[in-house]
Image 1: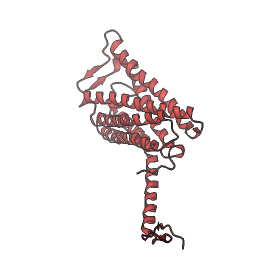
Image 2 (image 1 turned 120 degrees about the horizontal axis):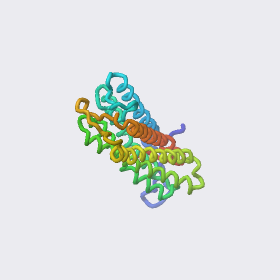
Image 3 (image 1 turned 135 degrees about the vertical axis):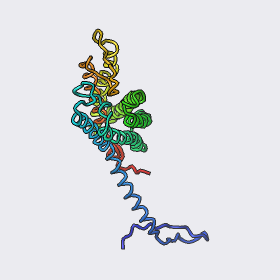
Image 4 (image 1 turned 90 degrees about the vertical axis):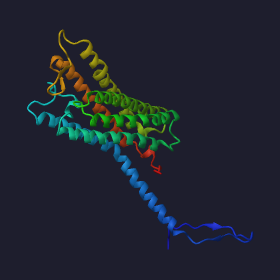
Length: 293
């Protein structure tokens, strides 16, 4: 009867005669099948991480925004029709959704950076420069994920300075992660003749990387420069409200609205970038023969 058991040939100890066969080790075959099954499950779970990260983060942001605008006659938006993301997580109950969703998102981002390295680990066909970029990007993914969790936990009302520093650090680390992976996939796509399987992923990453940096530049350097360096005469663009412990943005409404809109775009392009890894992790050119070990 056919069997997955393994048969070993062992040479005789007396130095003569043909080698004899030992009894098949059926346990080895069962263990091998269990290992293959576990590897297949882990591979499927890994492929779902980018999509789960994107869906959870988008859902938490949308729900937090909807609750902020719907559950209060005077929502903590500082007069903005599209409030800053941080302000949507400044009060319960939306604060609970904000904290939980973005904390999970931070953990997912760190895990994504590690899985991305694992999917490259044994791919000899990949350009060495591309591999170095991917390996270098992993610490930035972990740091960005940690900062995302911190800014979600430390709300802007009670911990304004730590929240601000964590938010800025997140965007910077996240930008480095996005850029390094864009370079890696673009290099492989342009330099390897057999890279058509990764073409869609590489082009998507390149486009989203450019859009991310355009939105980021308008949001932080340009936006902060306008609100701090070029406010209307006699107007305080950052008027602190002692009652709400948040800022009143109505003095420079259009400047803050521009920053708020580009902040959402920066986050959106980041989340879509994470989603593109669904095309890559342990698939095709990126590791159909790879085993998590």
